[in-house]
Length: 85
Image (cartoon, rainbow, N blue to C red; front, side, top):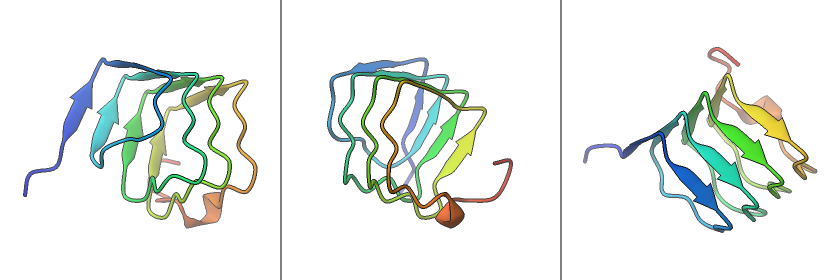
C-alpha cells in the first residue's frame, strides 16, 4: 500500500490526520490531543494554536517543524524518530 504524501496544504480546525508524509503544510487551531500520530512524517510544517496534548508520537518524524502557541503537554519526544530531529 502506497503511503499518502500531502504537500503545501492548509489544515484548520481538524481533529484527525491520515497516516503519511506532510511536507510544507500549515496546521491552525487543530485539536489533535490524544491522537495517534505515530509513524507520520512532518517536514517543514507549521503548527499554530494547536492542541497536541498527550498525542502518541512513536516513530513520528518532525523535520524543520515550527510550533507557535501550541499545547504540547505529555508528549514523549523520546519516542520520536531521531533522524534529523
